[in-house]
Image (cartoon, rainbow, N blue to C red):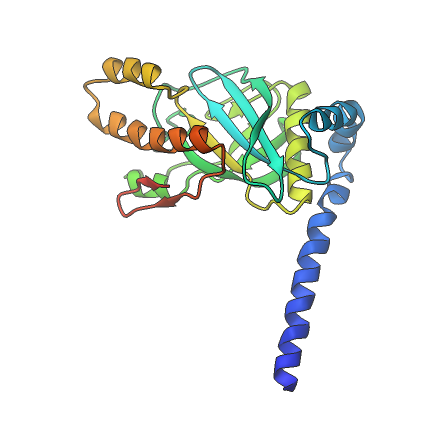
Amino acid sequence: MKITFLLFVILTAIICSTIFAQQNFLSEQRNFPRVRAAITEKGQSIKENLQNNGLTINNVHILIIAYKAEKELEIWAKEKKQTVCKLLADYQIVKSSGIPGPKRREGDMQVPEGFYKIDRFNPTSNFHLSLGINYPNQSDRIKSNAKSLGGDIFIHGSEVTIGCLPMTDDKIKEIYLYAVCAKNNGQNNIPVYIFPFRMTDDTFNIYKKRYENNQELIDFWTNLKTGYDKFFLEKKSLNTTVDELGNYKF
C-alpha cells in the first residue's frame, strides 16, 4: 500500500512538473532580448491572426510545411484538443541551396526532404532566431550510406543558407513566436513536412518526366506523395513511422 501511494506521489509530481515546465516555456523565452523584441513587434498581429481563425495564443498547436521548388513555407494550426488543421500563414523562403532531392550526406548543400519535427529553439542564433529540425531522422539514416549525414538544419533568419530554410528576420519573428506559443501549450512534437515541390498529380507528373532516369528518386518522391495526399485529404497531423528500408508509413 505504501509503495502504491509512493508511486502515485512520484507520478503526480512528474506530471505536474511537466505541465508547469510547458506553461513556463514562454516565460523562459522572454528572458532573451530577441524574443522580447519579436513579441513587442509581432505579438498583436499574431493574436489578431489567431483570433480571425478561431484560435488563441493559449490553445494553438501548429504544423509547418515547406515546398522547396516554390520557396514557400506554410503554418497550419488547430486548437490543441482538435485534430483538423487550417492554413494560418504562409511565407516566402528567401534563399535556397542544392537541387531537387533529399539530403543524403554532409556537405551536399541539400535541403532535406521528408517528415520531421522541431527539436530545438535557439533565441540567440547567429541567424537571428532559429528552429532546429531533427535531420537526420530514422529514414535519412537508413537510406544514406555516407559516413556523415551532416546536421544543424534550421528554419532561421538572416536570409542565408546552406541546406536550411532561411527567412527574413522580420518573418522569422512570427514563425518563431507561433512555435513558442504551441510549445507553451504543451505541443512537444511540432511537425515539419518538407516537400520537393507542391506534390499535386500534375506537378508530380512533370517531375517524374524530368527525372525519368532516376527511379530511386522517383520512388522516394512517390513515398512522400503518399503522405502529402493523406495530409491534404484529411488536414490532420500524420502518424508517421519508418520501415526497414527507410520508407515512410502513414
